Image (tube, helix red, strand yellow):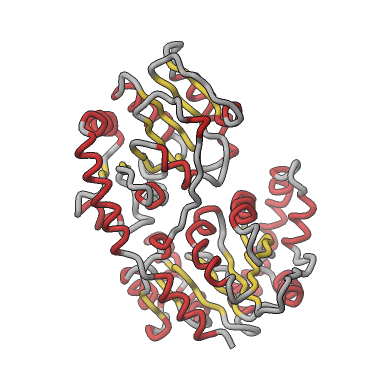
Length: 415
C-alpha cells in the first residue's frame, strides 16, 4: 500500500519538478531541490538543548504557531520545515533571533526523510493543522514520537479520509496525540477510526497569536476612512474594489493579495477599474517616503509579504479574503487582535469559530451583493462599528487557553 503511494508520489514529483524549478529560477532552485532530497547542512545551535522538529506548511500555519515556537525555544532548539517559499521567508523573519533553523520539508519518500532525520536528530516531530504526509508519519514515528498540533479536519478532507479509511486509520493511530481545535474535528477523527484516547480537544492556537507592533508612517496621509482587504483571492479583488468605489465618496482601500505571484494581475485589475479621480499606488514604491494625497480616494496594492497581521492596526475596517468564494476563508483574528470591525463573506468554513462571532454580533458576514451596502453603513455609523469590534475582542480573549494545554501535551511525550 505504502509502496504504491510512494511510487505515485515520486511520479507526480517528476512531472511537477520542471514547473517547481522554473518557479524558483530567481530563488536558488538547486538549493530547494537539495533540501527536498534531504541533502541539508546539519543545523548548528549555540546550546546543546534537545531538538524539536515542527512542520508548518505555509504563512498562515507559521504565524499561528509562532507563540508556541517562541515558548518552546526557551527550553529547546527548533527545526522548522515549510513547503512554500513564502512560509519559509516569513519564518526566517519572525524567528531570526531564536534558536530556530528553517528548511523545506523533504519529499515524502523514505530516503529523503531518513537523510533529513539523521542530520537533524530531533526528539519529537509536531505536525501543524492538516499536514498529513503518509511516509512522514509512518517512517518518523518509528524513530521518535510524532503528534498533531492545532489539528483540524475540514469537511472535504474528512470525506477523503473516510473513503480511504483503510489507509488513514492506521496512519493517524501512529500519532502519540492529536490536539484538535474543536469538538467537531474530534468527532470526525473518531469516525475515521482514530483511538478516542489519543484525541485532545484543546482549543485553537490561532487565539494565542502575538503580533509584532509596527508603525507605517509612509501610510499615515492616506485618505480616511481606511479599509484593508487582507489575503484576497481571485476574483475577490474586483468584488471588493467595486464595492468600495460604490460605497464611499472618500477614503482608501488597501488590497493585500494572498499570493505574491498575483501582484501584477491585481495591479492590472485595479488600473482597469479606477478613473483619474482615484489615486493608485503600490506599497513597494511608497514605503521609503511620505506622500501627500490630493485626491479624495486612493487604492493601494500592498505588494509585500508577511506583515499583513501588523498592517491591520492602521485600518478603520477589515475585510477578510478567501471568504467571498468557496475557499474557506482566511484568519479574521489578526484584525480582531487590533480591535478592528471585521467583515467576511459567507465561506468561512475553515474557521468554525466564526459562527460564535456571528451569533454574538461580533463580526459581520455578508454575500458579495451586500458588501457595498454594509461598508457604507459601518463607515457612516462608527459607533456601531466600534461596538462590533469590542464584542469581537472580548470573545477573542475568552477563547484563549490552547497554548498552555498544547505545551503540557508536548512535554508529556519528550523523553
